[in-house]
Length: 389
Image (cartoon, rainbow, N blue to C red):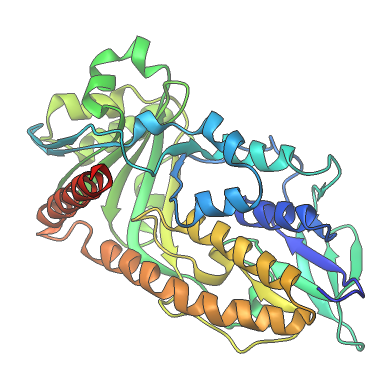
């Protein structure tokens, strides 16, 4: 980077923003990081993630956090199981030799936060506007303050980014899928049959127009999703998240006729439910470079959760942007190079995620899911055989 330091603002303290802040900190580059939540504990951070060796894990390695990651990663939870709606097991993959270990979002965020100075994040800063100045720099306007000027503002502020409108007019579009999230606590001791049903990793089952997906999190917690292909307003009319009893009854009604063992997943749920309509930006989303503004992660390329690429792409964005910024004498050209490469890099995973969302709950989706799992198992076996030679 130029010997004349620039003022950098990162908006959003999710995995992408925190990874970028850590990488810049390691390189001795100061950045101001703003987050709308009041603290790291304001709300649950969501479920489990699988970090890929070539992206999420690579970013952590560049950040010097591999050892810390291995302490929180769950290599034992990489399995997959697939059932029919009548409870018949189609596939059980209990191999733990893969290199996509699970990690809870909260644990990953804590790892990244602890790697930064205690005052690295300005909490409770809900961004209202990025205001251009006459000198080409930008101010950040919050609900109770104004910060700036900044030479470079990086939007790591997720699906509904307040930074994105400065470079792109696109907004995420509804995919046609809505997830109803639920959780099961202390499953190993309180619900051993369900623990066995799910196994060490994730399980799925589907029938016409609906499916169940359940993932093992840390601390013997299961996080489940009832998935429907419906209009975006349907779930709000159908479900009352304020009434856990009504939620369970409504979900059991929607899955009427399914195997009792699968319905027990709903019956065992705790009282926390959430409606999660799935949105995505267009595949190939890009923008014309604008000096002083860029995006990473969901702000740049929001995609459906199928394939688990979102957080991995965000963390790799951070790693690549940090490398360009710290390795160039011209930060404007560094940002331009990052964007050019990122647009190409995310096109394939975004396309695959969009295709997976499009075929989810189609009349052949279970057949395709089974074929995908079998192909992955064969690829992993082949890779293991080659490594042993």
